[in-house]
Image (cartoon, rainbow, N blue to C red; front, side):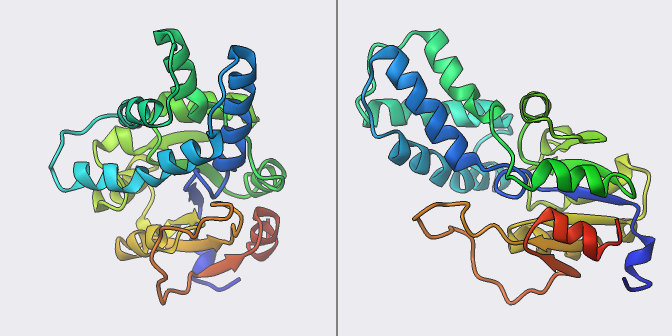
Length: 239
């Protein structure tokens, strides 16, 4: 490991796609819900459309077109339209709340818990996600994710890739920016972190979007460390 990286004391993680397999988790959860309720729907397509609306919705907040709202509320606004689009009828408000909170019930990739457990022996490990604090905390309890602390875009009332999120996270950890490494499966997230002076680690997650192409731009960007799993990242960081 280089001398520059030896200064790193904390790792902040993107969560959706990097640490948790949101697509498989949501499809399985909603299919089980549909069986219990006797509701037939294309839950996989609904899941893909729901996630597909994620970045465009956040961009409206970033551009000031809509006021800041926590991610749970943004998810619910999209969900209501999708339930109508896919002909899912007869749901109670409690049912809709349950479906919307599926984002709180996501499973980690197979390497996530052992990889994080290994990394936290050497580093402080924290979320740095667009998910709101309650969502990330509930998800950690559900999936057994061993975070040292939960940092959320909600704390800064901005969404990634706004600079305030990355700067705010380093400030909350009382660390210099080059003492914090952003870990993500999305290079635009890492590029935004590097622009604020953070170190970067790319973790490849080719199955995140299933058969759909990833909606993120292909960037000519090389992270400080690149790995195919959190276990490999720990190996490369000497954890």
